[in-house]
Length: 65
Image (cartoon, rainbow, N blue to C red; front, top):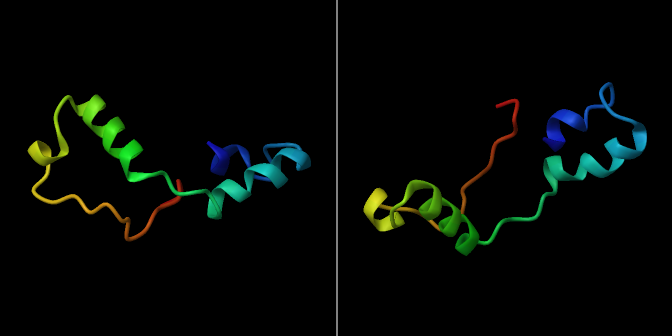
C-alpha cells in the first residue's frame, strides 16, 4: 500500500516522506510471524505444504514487479 499511496502525485508531501521508507527500508518480518500467518491461512503446517522452506529470504519484490 505504501508503494502505491507513497507516489508523489497521489499523496501529500508529508505522507510521501514517511511512506517512501517502506519501499526500500522496511524492517524484515520475523520468520515465526511468517510461519504463523501461512499456517493459519493455509490450514496446515509448513512441513506438510512444502518440501523445503528457507527461513532467510533471498530477496523481495516491489508492487511494480
